[in-house]
Image (tube, rainbow, N blue to C red; front, top):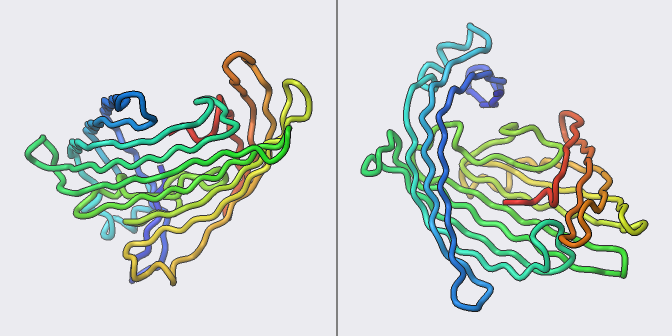
Length: 248
């Protein structure tokens, strides 16, 4: 994977790493009574071996990043979800927050907190036009490894291209149902990644937009599949979508 970091000596550089990992994720949530609220826990285990595969002249800058270490992380989850469908919603709201701790007490080589909060809101404007709005924020506190830092996760922007201790983004999409089973998608979004809230104003906004198509594969479950094509600051990309692109 490629990560990007700005150094005082040489400016921004692309750093190419190979990360061999043994991952495990356990997550469970329980509905609270007959309400739309859910609570649960999440555990992440990640044993990694990081090796540098980039320009050998940069070794003096990244020696501290090449490690064999373990991340062990335990956290709590709270959600509210009243969407009308989990695959391709037409209306409703989902709110989510999870707060996680990595510590040597649970076998981690790092000590840090990780906070993730997001919301998805869907609303039908006309009989065949449906809108979705996504707001997403992530933040770390403490000594997190570089591959666990928040980054902008959005169509049109490569994974880990814009990274910091804090990331914020917003994405808007519209679905136009053309016929019984076929739909057209339009979407766009923006976000920024930075290391401190004091730097929010000076951090750059990064924009991405695109279009796509959907086919109603299973009418009973409102399950749509399709392909999205997106353009961001650096490149074009395509995505094969099963259900919604927002499935966290």
